[in-house]
Image (cartoon, rainbow, N blue to C red):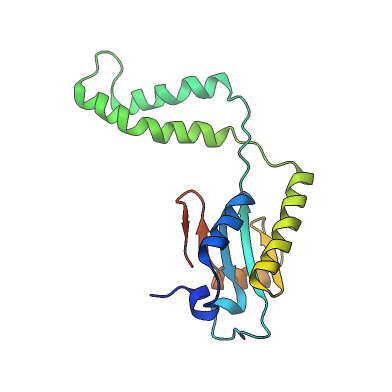
Length: 168
């Protein structure tokens, strides 16, 4: 099955798009609007993209959070006291999930100035890449109910940094 971009814009290099999104700290990108519908006009239509930005800076986790998570695992696995080998195996399997929770809880938001500069740079790079107008929106809550519904009805995931995948 071909993706939306390959179907509507076959000249697009998906590896270059992957690198462009990754280098600008995008965690997820979605296409929405006319490009995801039969209304797309290869000559006249713009490209609508919604992105989620990622910021790798972390703060020191609260001491209680670091201590609480292993206790939570121990409590649910029944490994208080003298753990059995099966309970230890359960604990080892779920520690990465708890670790992910701890680390994601300690992320801090990208400073507004840096976020603005990143969005403008990305917008310019996307317009140059696609050689057409690009409407770029973030994943911040959309207040206009009609626009929000339109986005939700037509959005299609094209990039996921966590899974290191591009769906184009």
